[in-house]
Image (cartoon, rainbow, N blue to C red; front, side, top):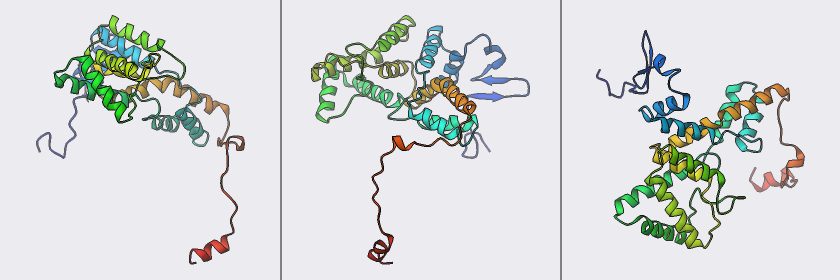
Length: 270
């Protein structure tokens, strides 16, 4: 049966032969020790060897979300799970599943940037004109712009400023970043909120769009970035000796009222 039919898996990611392991066609024995982990990660996901600047920016991306705080839902989920199933893989699975639209993942922001950037490129309009029109449409529809705003920072998010500086230094800054910043300026102007920042998740997403990553790949990279912190929390929980973590009554509010079963059964037709 020919390759490419429904009966075959087809992959260009890696190959294991009798004499060597190949990553995107390159011998692993050649890569290891010569190309750093972020560079090999880029190669695996994007399919091509990165430039030194792209590899450096991958290192920045993978270092930007490292802290996985105890207050985060994914950390709580991981620690609760290993308190009853004390193995690392169970905790990692729980923590990874907690990444999504409302926590950790830049996927939603990346999708917004990718789609609106492509629409602007096809429109023939100037960047600022298209950004003003887009913001007008979003505000009329009462839609939020992902990646804007922070509960503490005003005017400038220092994390975003650092990411932009590094991206420019490594020559991975481009039109996608400029477009997203134009949308940010247009939103500040239209909402009369000059203090509204472009936050670190937004900046990371715009850089990853510029580097060619898909929104779903961005989610995977964000999760990869958090794994060391998640491993540390799981290890700490495993060593604590605490079994079966439960939500304490001091953190629980009960809304149920006591009811009699007999009358309820008769009313339901039993």
